[in-house]
Amino acid sequence: MSLFDRFRRPSPDGTSLDARIPPGQTLTKGFPVLTYGPTPIVFPEKWACRVWGIYETGVVFTWADLQAMPRTKVHCDIHCVTRWSKLDTDWEGVRFSDFLKAVEARLGPLPASVTHVMQHSFGGYTTNTPLSYLMDDNVLLATTFDGQPLEAEHGGPVRMMLPRYYFWKSAKWLNGIEFMSADRPGFWERYGYHNNGDPWKEERFSE
Image (cartoon, rainbow, N blue to C red; front, side, top):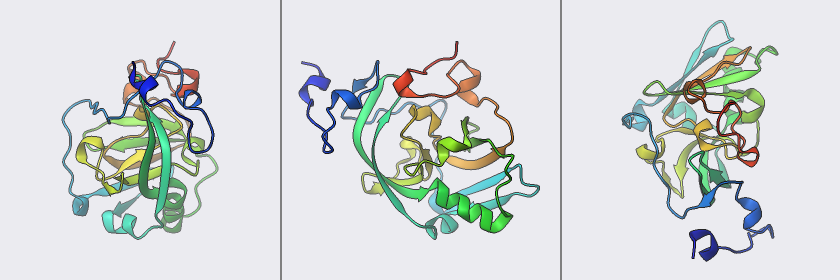
């Protein structure tokens, strides 16, 4: 019996389990660790996130800055392009839209010309998304998973969390947000991953 069959059940909102697993995915109860390169070890008190790009000047947010922002909890399913899905995960952090308010408080209103965002990570990893992806209510700069501080192997102390898309679009070890007036590919996108990454459309790889 497969793991999927063993844990087949209706979801709390009445949606069947089958309907929550995107095409080509397999259910896991674990939390697989898939990382390109070494795992950065960043102590929270040393964490900082630089914001720059379309703004003429940039700004840096510290761990203390982030902790002072409104906190949001998100219960969601997550999906990895390597074909595993994990259901009913619990995250907490700062909603991206609230983070953006803090950016605008320091730098002024986001220019209307901004269409895309590049997420940057300790270690040099990047991934690109339309700004609209990040404005969903369940998108977080996440600092906890399952009620505990986010472990380094899963991107702690801070990772982006976009549950609507394949998980490579949720950059681990976040340390930079670049606002852009045009799209350009991030790390995996340059190596053949799909530019959008919608699991329900199986946007795994570019054509």
